[in-house]
Image (tube, rainbow, N blue to C red; front, side, top):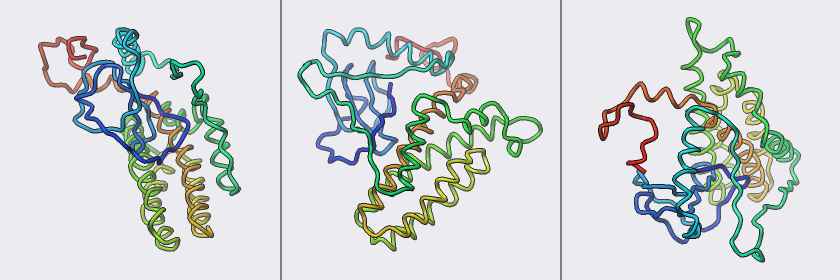
Length: 268
């Protein structure tokens, strides 16, 4: 199970571990897929490597499968809001609460303010998409395909395009990076704007000229980090409310399950 964090980290990674090899209770952090923290509650199924953060104390690991089941069922069916709080066992240790982000750029301040606003409040644009209120999308009275496209495109845009661009911004010249951003950004932000994410498209329209006018790489990275914080919040909300249970109707018979796709304790 994983949750988006309120930070954008590009810290050096010292150790990675395959998800399939992780023990129950392993804490991981994925920078390149949305800055998410993961907690291993059972057998890992994805053959991917992620940076290791730490380990849940052994005396609490027996609780994790039940927590994992609750999170699974909530994501598929209940759609309640769940928030994760992580604290160190040592009460004298640093609390881990991030400092409030401060920006010098006015554009970055706009992004950060909106990211903070939607931390605990579902963005209006996403709610309108999932409720079928964007009349310009969908065909023949249905809007699921438009919702599906928007969810997938948003994930690809923010988690798999904008974060790598943050990494590239450290090595490319200011001019080359601005050109690169323009090439990658417009197809995503324009389509997502048509899909109903109007504020995201508006913010992308603020980001590109601000990057083009930046005087140094520090200013570029400040803008990108602020935009990513906002984008990561959108991804978290989109993930929360997407109707994942529909996948149960497109399944493979696995392990004798009567209803493939439902929680199976034998597989965790």
